[in-house]
Length: 284
Ligand code: ADP
Image: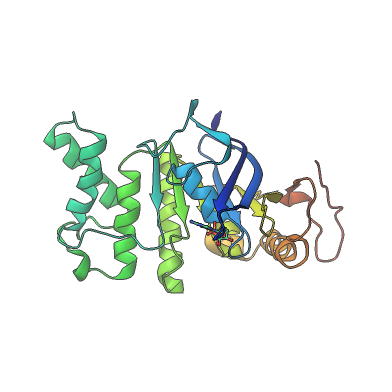
C-alpha cells in the first residue's frame, strides 16, 4: 500500500539578487507503507530540502506530496522529524520532553494513557531507567534516543530522519541504528533517512535513492537492497551483496552523480559481482 506519493516536487530559493535558485527539480518517488528509504547525495545537493518539504517545514515550489491519501500543506502530526541534534528542552526530563509532543497530539487522551505512550516510547529506545534524567545528565547518544522516542511517541505516518546519527561516535551510532531497526521491525513506520553514510543506508534501508548534484538536483538512481528482515549486522557485513551495494553507491557518487539521465532503477541481486559474473540490469 502506498504511504507517500511525491509528485515532481521542486524547490527554488531566492538568490541574493532575488532571482530563483532551483535547488531541486522534478523529484518524484512513491514510498510503500512500512518501507525504509534512504536518501544519499553529495553535500549541498538538496537532501535536506527534500526532507524539510516532506516535513512541511519548507514551502514546496512545484509539485505536491500526498501522505496517507492527503496532500500535505505545512507541518502536521502525521509526520515526525529527528534531526542531527535532538534540541531537547534543558529544563525538562526525558519523560517531560517526550510528553510535550504527546500532549499536543493526543489532547483528549487521559493522563494515564499519555503516560503509557511516553513510557512505552522511552522503553523502546532503551531509556526505561532514565526517564527522570535531565538533558545535562545524559550523553549525546542518550539525548538522541530521547529525540527518537519523542518522534515515535507521536505514531507518525511518516518518520523523517535527517542524519540522526551523524554526530555520534561509531559505537553509539551502531547501537542507535540497531535501536532504530528494532523499532521499525515492530512498528512498521514508513521512514525516510537522509544520510551521508553509505554503510548505514545499505544496512538499514529497503531502497536507496541517489540524488544527482545540484543545482537542479533530482533522482539519479534507485537501488533496492535485498537483505531480508530482521537484519543481523554480523551476517550482513560478511555478505558479498553488502559490498556490491556499497560499491554501487560509491561509484554513483564518484562517477555518475553529475550526469543528467532518466532515473535508473536497480535491484541489488542483479548488481555485477566484483568478478563480473552477473549482468547488471537497469530498468527505466
Ligand atoms: P544537502 O542537505 O544535500 O546538504 P540542502 O538541501 O541543504 O543540501 O541545500 C541544497 C541547495 O540549496 C544548496 O545549494 C544550498 O546552498 C541551497 N539552500 C538550502 N537552503 C537554502 C535557503 N534557505 N536559502 C537559499 N538557498 C538554500
